[in-house]
Image (cartoon, rainbow, N blue to C red):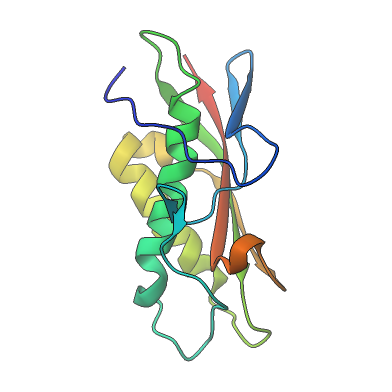
Length: 142
């Protein structure tokens, strides 16, 4: 196993990830670093998408870290099976897939082709802590 990072700090009564057999399911992860939200607020159509990129990458990193921390010695994530990206979007925002692209790009940087998954990008009326995004993944481990 590579470098072990601490799990994201839960903001409620839940665990960052659960495992059943070779399947790992993460909780929804917001863009918190050391428990602190790095960006908050509604995603607007008039704000450049790049404004949100680091927040999306942080949320994806939190999800991947939680998943990796469920691995045992010698195991690795062999495939991200699903990626779900929730976006705290204003009603007129329609570029949801770009958020998923930012997350996929991060997962591919970390896992290679195993980071490309089936995915959904979903606009929400609000998210916990006024996060701009929340990400969860399901992975297979061997």
